[in-house]
Length: 214
Image 1 (cartoon, rainbow, N blue to C red):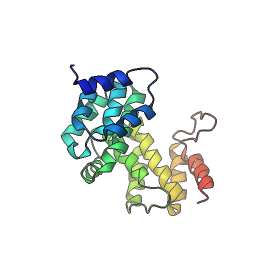
Image 2: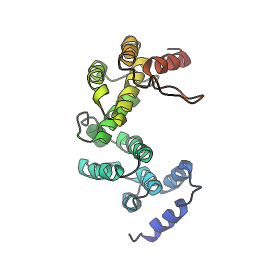
Image 3: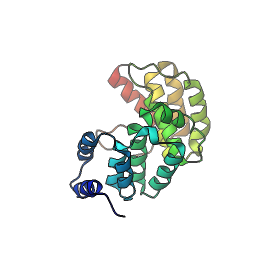
Image 4: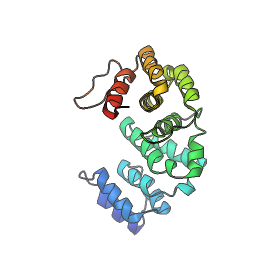
């Protein structure tokens, strides 16, 4: 496709093996918001231009129809890129605007695997130190308990993340989250690199609680 001079210059700048995520953030900081430029970069179909596009889109223009199109495009990438783009879409765009937050909260039963992942990942990110958790914990744990073993791997991870966050930051539910991990056994057999935290809920919760002294 033919790019505008600005888009072509940026495309050439980032289309080198040395480009890092920090470089994309530096470029995005200078641009701020430019939705038309973002969509030009997005339509190159390439990973790094799409990552940059996700930093400079205007969240006010991200309707459900537009997001469905982004979702369809993201699914064409290989797994690691697909998950990175999905999580960047959530963190850098969807979580920044009331309209798109409302959309995320409606994706619990979305037919899209990526949108269900975003729903659950967002729920987990709402639970941090010093932040009062939403009042839907009981409902979420019920859904996780009944659905996690049947979910797609991408969604399983996000549901597990949310259960971990609940177990870490909401002590009243900690034992329930540990028992959930013991029952499902998810990630128990995974090999974990030195210095990395396991995803197996009993171990993950114990490590993080000890670190934070919660």
